[in-house]
Length: 624
Image (cartoon, rainbow, N blue to C red):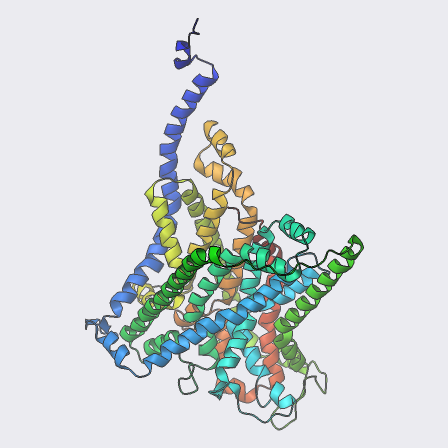
């Protein structure tokens, strides 16, 4: 006799099935209300990105079809001018030298540092701090140390007895020097990202390979490289985009010289806008730089896909080749072998730490040297140790005198940096936290479209936004003001921070949120009281990243703010140290002290944020 199953379709009050139906009705009401709340979460983020990123991109392209600052529509004349200018080829070539040359040495050094710091190491925290130190030093300060170090009159060449011209005015040497300095300043970017990739590789794979007799090279070739392949491609692609359109390095050290040998599309655009007052041609150069860069990336990706397809077809017909396996060693040798690997990693980490701190050590040495410079011979170590440079600088009116309205004290600019950095960081974390959570919980085409736009915005070079932002802030009566700088700087970090939070929230379990929603908790309470505590690692990581990059931001601080009393510390120090009066009256030792003041601040900042950065690249902040 068949069992009666009709009762299963009629939920009984108080039964689990009846509770499930009630939950579905509750979820329907909560879902509609939550969708509205998520839209409110996302609105401030979208407003910021539309006003300070999307509209500037559109305006930049439109301005490229206009004449100078007149706004007269001239069609494609600016583009015709570019393609008929004989110097344009050199601009594009220099941009590729800057882009490719910026990636390769930086990646190799970053990979070496990541491999050295990946596992337990005696003194790893200190070595990590020293290796990452250039990452938190602003461009004017770091490049100022290199100018002091390479100065033919008072730097290392003079100390070694070499009578040479400045490497920054030598067309044959300048690019090699620039790319070496760039590698010193940027390999930490790869170190952090590759550490995240290395941490994600299960240790069991390496143990199994060791048991099978695989050597160090075999493990690196067949486990490590495939394990970090995806993050390598992403990091190199992003760094190429940034290097191709990078501005600070060339502008500060060579200004495009000698005789245009280092002029790129980015520095050429800046010169056209702020020296020639031709914003139409400036935006033409930035638009062309994006097009050229996209074409180059598309070609590389296309060739890579073609090679991969050919390889998949050809590989089965090729004879297999195996590297000879190393003979198994007795277990008594395991500890000795591991000790040898640790020693090698320690040596590598120490070497890379010395590379990172070498300009700082030279600057520190010069700061204790009381030699006045000029005709006096110089040495790597002070011949006469003295604190006179410190007493002279720390008591200088340039730091503290508030009576000079035309030239405010640098301490005032230092305070401006604190205000701007704190404000930008708070706004970025709040907007990206709410926006990332909304994008993770919303369904449909809207979140997908927003995520796509965020990825696109992240790939747009900052130099593209500068010139239209100048006009937008002027229209909003915010040009040259601290609020205007804060809003513009916030916009350039929002895309990455929001994507970062969205990835994290996608990987968090939702059962607790669903239970809280059934108990009557709204989306705001769920986010702030339940989800936010879980997101502390990613909040810490993004806070550290935003703090460091905002503190060191130079391009917007230089172009969008012109008054000395409003500028932040990096451009103010660069402006002060570039003046004729400073170079003529300040000894090399005193110049070193001026550079060490922001370095000390950078060390403190890195020490305070190192744990958060470590959480990010050791996998504690990102899931999924």
